[in-house]
Image (cartoon, rainbow, N blue to C red; front, side, top):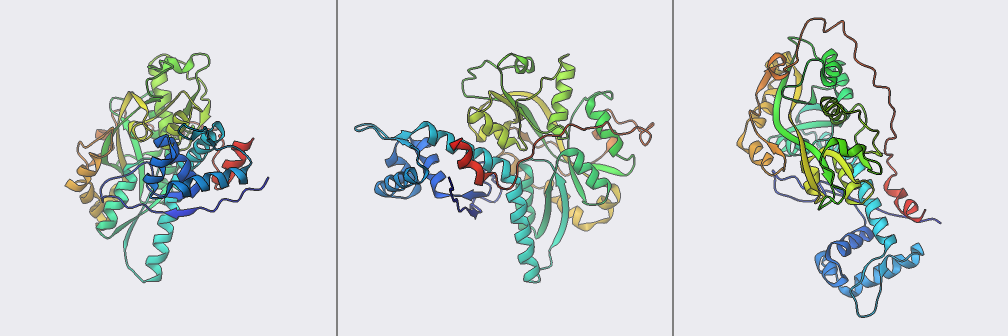
Length: 396
């Protein structure tokens, strides 16, 4: 069965310092707009009103898609509200999960298109390259930087890959998160220490953020601790092994004296992990409180991290463009933006800390001689045609 889906790449308008995690930018398709509106409102009439469409149009489009797919999308019962059929529900959630996985790729695509237009119009814009994992403050940072005539070229990568890129000179900044009070023999210390050079790097503080367990509303599986993830039958989602989130999670398991169970699902973003729980594909996931709130999930806090940007000391001291970004992070606009993100808080944003102060386990002795631990676990990564496969996955 061949099903063609044509998407539009949209950038939705929003207040300057407010990040809408549900759709910072999104691939838009009218079928899934209809399914989501019907799921949200519970009947066709209010769903149609929310989309600015007529009842007759929505009814007709749903019927047309049912004929094209050969499956029932909506339960049509005379005298009762029309609701999503099991296939319609499944299709909607699969597409939502695919969108959540692809969101960083879409962000990179949009940044590249902006760069192309700047070059075409001969606009001279100061640029900094930033390599980092999935974090909502990066979208806020780019928005505010753009307002100040500064462009952030974002490359999304796991923490280890971001540190490798900084070490190789492929970026000016690398996203980095660490808890206060982490021991020098922790996995975090052992993994990160070889990539951090004494007297060479500084950490520019952005914010503090909260990570924990995302569970379904009402927490029906009564998941409240890490030990609950090891219970028989509990399905949970995590990030890939080289991500900072996964390294943090391994540390938390070790501190609790627990062996970390293998996750049921590997998801590349916080939004994708949250969507796995919201869709019922997982009972729990570990990630940011912001993502849990965006997906209307219940959240169990587990850890508070300092999130910042690693940069070379020489860049911080000698690059005026870098100083413009530091000034932005210390501005009231940045603090106001952070206040819109659940689980984020400002402490000393815009302050560049020496590693000895920022990292409690920092020890320069033997730093160069200690090799980085091998991270050889390979996990499946989402492919760019995820959304194109959504219908076929639902039909399976």
